Amino acid sequence: EAGVAQSPRYKIIEKRQSVAFWCNPISGHATLYWYQQILGQGPKLLIQFQNNGVVDDSQLPKDRFSAERLKGVDSTLKIQPAKLEDSAVYLCASSSGLRNIQYFGAGTRLSVL
Amino acid sequence: AQSVAQPEDQVNVAEGNPLTVKCTYSVSGNPYLFWYVQYPNRGLQFLLKYITGDNLVKGSYGFEAEFNKSQTSFHLKKPSALVSDSALYFCAVRDNAGNMLTFGGGTRLMVKP
Image (cartoon, rainbow over all chains, first blue to last red; front, side, top):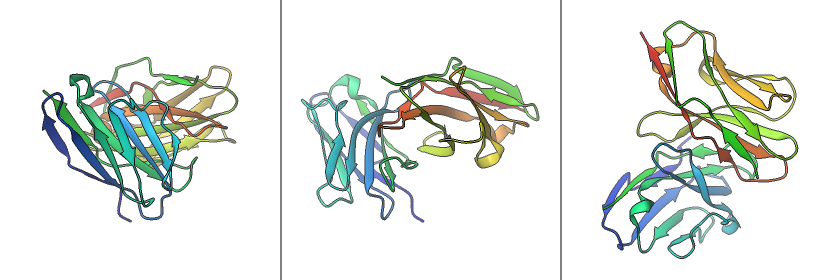
């Protein structure tokens, strides 16, 4: 069974630029999550989808972050414009249901200079 | 609000010795508890979970965890550590009504030959 796929693996941008991350969940998983993991900290949930609907985006900085999952499969997370403090690893996870085990991708490491 | 504390930034053990990685939690109602492991440049991998039932939960790679309701703890254990167990370990909690997983700050486990 293929795992959660994320791209790119690494991204370096300058502040105020835009960036987008892509995630393809495990086949058949209806629930998809985006987490932000700052160096030395645990992952923090940014947004959670159930199929193509948002379940929880209470911790998403909506003035600069956006995410979509238009067809209920792949998802993109966008930051526009980026700030220095956005430097982190962005992890995507999926699960077969809202309360089931979450499986994580390898993440995208973002450096904002 | 739910929270997780991992009081040790790093745990050092010798190969072959038993290991314990500590976790305490705070949540409304009955907790759902998880341990994940993160190897360098990789996403989080699920180790084990406690939902209900037996307080001693067995997981992957010989790891187990003991749920203690009175102490609100869920410590990760292994009888005999391997050098390959060296990694970052995260404890996480979810309440039985919600969907959001809250992670601790992580504990780095170093197993020396």
